Image 1: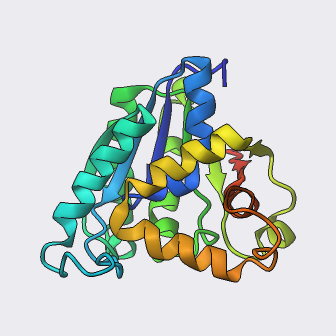
Image 2: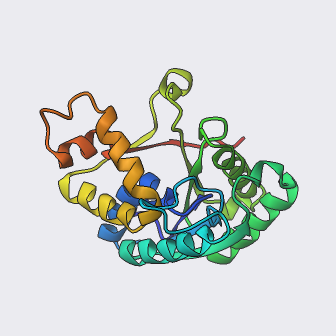
Length: 227
């Protein structure tokens, strides 16, 4: 990461930066590279309301915004809210969405942008914001255009896309750092991590950290190729 001057992560939801990028952020911090998270929405339509529930559909966004603030403080990064509504990004005007992201990127002037790989982001918001971000960078002056790393998370992405260009393997300290960031998103994290534990076939023979390392211990990206 040492060659980069500023990294911008563009994902749609509070917690995407922690689940999808905390290990990469750790490496940036080691190299003294600043990171800014552009968060597309406040996750208003998230299904998890806490266990037991402490929010409802009308109040959830207030909790998730505070969780995002706390997680970014834990990660040691800045963040900006793009101001869209959860589960609506696929319906936004694509030209306008790309133009908005382009304007923010040009203000920050990053050397690396990280986003989701279109059609391999699982969630429609992931795909839509990834597509818009890649288009935003394409529209930038080629002389100032940052590198784009695209994260694919579909089950068969390697079969379809081939081996990722960049793999960041997390050691124990990095996994602990990632888990710490994830748990700042209290409304979402508990159920997700419990499910990961239940689904892991080696859960009976490995301790919790190792199980989480199996599931969360690699962050993989494709370098987007522009013509």
